[in-house]
Image (tube, rainbow, N blue to C red; front, side, top):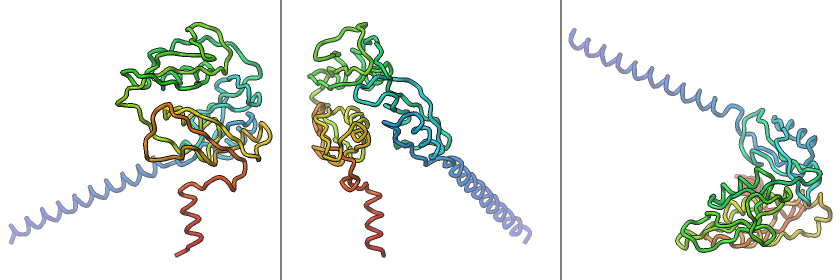
Length: 274
């Protein structure tokens, strides 16, 4: 009897230990989930085209703050307006996050052209952006390394490192293209403004073909607020050769702007409730 009791006691304590360990692990997982999700889920607004006061007010409404990190001269943008932001619009951040803004300067300044030959396209674009230059056309030619920078051009001509040019100028990149690694996918640009659409296209190794505004866009302010409602080619799961051009169509008429997947699901549920 004693022997059986001893065995039962071991079993009971073993089960109790397992139960306690399981409870501690479960509590730890719940705590970690709550902690890591704390203050997350805030989506960064799009500050493009706003002046600093407007951006600051919008950030405050979203439990964030903004600061001016740099300036760049962009000819077709209102002086003092936000040109770029870090993190990008739509990024998920914690409450109280500071968003760094690059604003449009009132007068162009002169910058020195860097040497970006040999860089990857991503590195070259980052380097150009850091000194106030824009990425222009992506020009591909056959090479062993895809998206390796082979040359740099300004106004259609090669530009040497050290040359002084105006901030905000566009630099075309001559890039390598390996025939076995020459395809990319067309991103969904709908609901994006011009700047974000062009950025995403270039990140996808594609060029902007034309930017076409509808009749709702009558002023420069309208063009800043306008978003893409259509693109050619359309977003697709099928690949396209790098360097291809995409045409975007923009409007300020929100009735033309297609719903995203979540909005479509919400609308469908409201229209066809179970």
